[in-house]
Image (tube, rainbow, N blue to C red; front, side, top):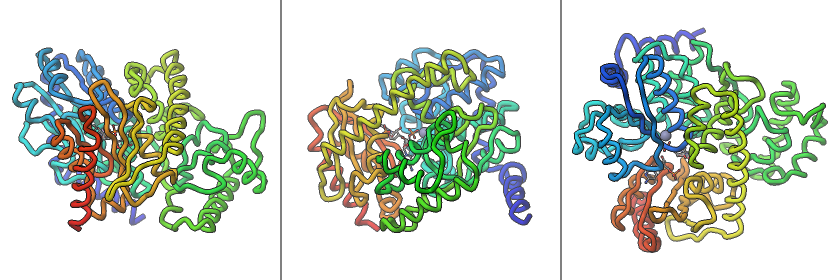
Length: 476
Ligand code: C5P
Ligand code: C5P
Ligand code: ZN
């Protein structure tokens, strides 16, 4: 009762009594948008970028405004100049914050709703949590920023479900095993309007759709010997517990009884502990999971994590239109197309992981890296790098840097850990500065960042980055 009262008081005090400056900024942006009849939406090609665009497009559609959308791998000057030439009010979502000076210089009528580490250059309609003391890596995603504006444009609180899909897609629930801060507030609004719910459950990908033994097999965080990557081991483990694998169809997590779920979780935890996995990592196995109540049970869209992977499977393969249509409500042919792209995406991720395993990584003093060349698509190499770290393929004491060929040069993706952040690591700063020194561009978040550098500069870039990361880690 006390907790309920406390949470509600907090909610009222943030939104109504003391107007948080972030909400004031959202209000300002919403008013600016509503002063126009048409808009261009520019967004990022990942789950968060698609959810952000979905929220904005819905809000504009409901307001009777016309809009067009463009999805970008990254926002560079050439892309920005093209957009400026359209001479239309432009809403940037999940990107834009690192290009504020250029947006100003081009005199664009622009709204920027982003959560990447920003340049602190004044711009009237720039909504970024970092500018308001809120951490954009864990507390508000790009789709959360878009949602804050949409809810000021009209009765759009039902779009909170997409905001949570974006936050989960950006792994903002990972550090604490739950959504916190501004994300939490959005979750609570979604619960209030009946589009979202949450529960404590096993935090494995595919609870809605995968046969249970497959669910366990792909457990990467933590990596459990005898379970992770071991289909036979998973089947044996479940049989030993007396859990039936099949009725007419393969049983999925959502088909199990509560007692069966509890038994599996407690036995997996026991297995982790006897395998020497530290207790704080074992805890990752269980946490909050988020359900989209308007979506059909047993579909990817019912679960925020599966939904976000489905979106990644579209835009990262030049099919942003497919992902956006799903966000806008298509559950017919386009949705079927998205599901077929998802199957291919999963296979590509597994092949990417296999490559890292076979090729191995090279360690420098303060980082480790692998070069995928053209074997892993540049748009998913960051996901593979992140998964390889969780899967125990690589040393968790160093950040992982991945290279892949791209049309513009070499794509760099970097992933760190919470422990390293605590020791002073900031990959966004390190990649931004190192890329600049070799004539490239980069940025992102402290824990996950990216860059594009000229081809052939990899070694020089690595040695600069190694020194910068070393200096960051020494400072604390
Ligand atoms: O561009 P955007 O901010 O949407 O992308 C964030 C990226 O950072 C995602 O690929 C996400 O998976 C990654 N990330 C991560 N671990 C975190 C936070 C973000 O790997 N704790
Ligand atoms: O591409 P990847 O998933 O590795 O990107 C990690 C994070 O770095 C994302 O948030 C992405 O938007 C950001 N990034 C960036 N500038 C780049 C490349 C990536 O800000 N040139
Ligand atoms: Zn994002």
